[in-house]
Image 1 (cartoon, helix red, strand yellow):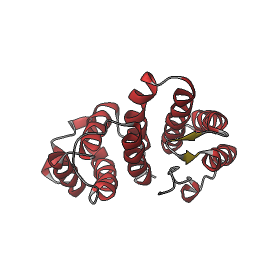
Image 2: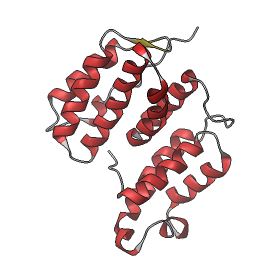
Image 3: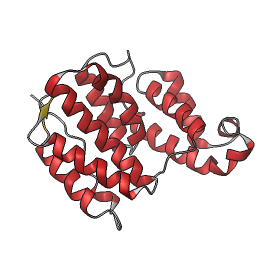
Image 4: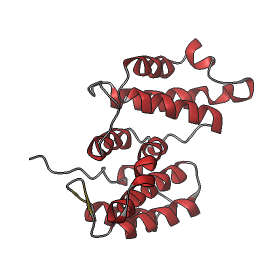
Length: 189
């Protein structure tokens, strides 16, 4: 698992990763960051240089996950956002999943809002876990599981995901990262 960087480079990298979902220039920047070298060195201040391997690892994970995705306009529909969230989730870019879905959650209403909140909580829960915040991870994963229980969104059945989140929240002291559930996807028609 790749923990989050300190605040300033974390936010800057998240912006590049989100832009790389649909922008070729951002993908090139992400690939350069993954390779390390002068591009990455310019991103980090003197006090942050020790985090260069972490920057490269997060950039590499995101770059690999997004490399084969089609480029185009930024996600405008909820279905497109959920598809983008799936790609980021697969790369273990949980902070970025949160950043991608939070704006949609803010404007949603009713059951869609509750469901999006559960998905955001799941992403933040695993990010807390990656950063060693077991208490925060446990609380958010349990709440996300409860919030997603019995729900559907974008054609995806969320109950299996909800149960997996609840299981994750129960044993975080020796968490097996292969137990992170896959992002819930709608069956293809």
